[in-house]
Length: 253
Length: 321
Image (cartoon, rainbow over all chains, first blue to last red; front, side, top):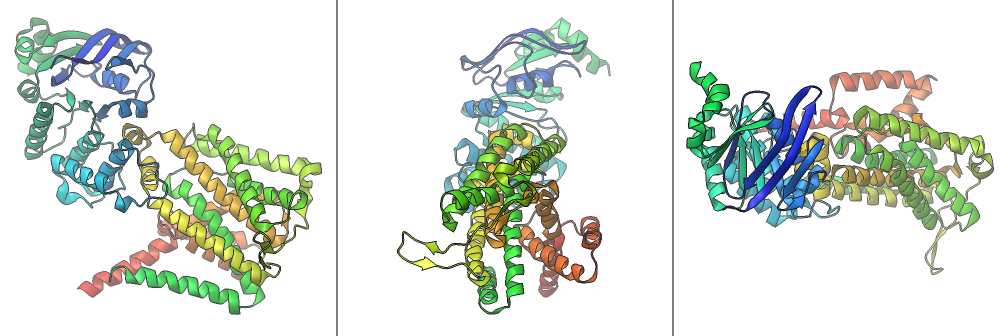
């Protein structure tokens, strides 16, 4: 652990008068399961959007593995190994579960430009896709059209498509929202396991504090575009400022 | 067992296409050539519309590029039909590359309107550059020379019956190519772009690049159809580039079924057949075609192919029970 995989310098973002990132400086270390928390409108999703390329960066720099990716298009960032899942279900609705997973795998293997090959014969990629389906537990829904899945299964697929890229840095935006407890536990167990394997560094945005504190090595608290707290779960729990603006609220309720 | 039926079906269709070429009358042969030309045009076009989800109103321009490309080549360089067709396809693909470069940066309505604008620009260029293109007369008197292969042997295509088999060869080749494209990893990536362009980017797909590729491919098929039509009618006309002609593959695909592979082909058969039948009774064939299209869009989204699949699917279920 300890290698800096992502470094953000003086990142700024405004939507009109609303400030969602103010001179943000942040380092994400490889292998450290990091969670980002904060009240609604704190700028969590915006931060992910900026890092992954869904929103253009207004000012500041983003370095991934010491390479400037601030203005790279999305697909190039993905090729380098930065990927994400979405807060709302964002999959390929009319394709089968298997095809959903296969698209990123073929692309990352540099095979989706094969005009004339038969998809049915891409053995390596197909078995990789089977592997991903097993990880997220959708093997028995393999040939189902994605829209026909239950909401929870769609959420699993959402994470699966992101995992299929085999990224070295993966942002999961509220991955367990809308899942039933069984699915939730299975997915979190998988994330923990994958994180330990060390291939992928996970950054989670979550609202469920139990998940955040039980899973994370490090917690970052965002509030109105600035970092309010940063440390291991114990430190964050004790942080006075954080309790005031965020945790305190939920305790009072 | 599972594979025998479709293979048998395909052989039956090819056999009957050859049979039509050998035994039917001149009028039927002419109609079938028109069906196959429209089929090539629509099949290539549907890679863009049904597969990738991009609605272009400008493919008439590429059709015309194929037609005029062959026309110029045949009148000024050499009359060899195959070379002319290759030139036509290349001209169409090049034009599609140039126009596509600007269009694929935009999506949905903006993409469609840009293709419409470019298409109409090509139309008015053809219309106004009288010295080069013959203006509203078009290029006329293009000959169907015999196919010679390095002077070794010659196959005449002078009569419509002989020409029919050249068209049939290109038709089968196009169908096979499009089928392979749709079932390739590239085809899957295109379907992904149709379903969710943003997610495709997060799957590592360079969406603009893929859109441009398929735009050029569909343009090339339009060029092939245009070149063949020029050989059939022995002229290239400016209205090939008109937006109303660009709309034909859209109507055909809708009629046959947007999302199925055979939709554009089945649609072409119905389109030409309906036009022939309705025109026997009334001048306003578009009015009645409009009614049919209305029924298909409102009631049968999957088109003719969708209806057939629904029926056979049902009978299969009944068999199981």
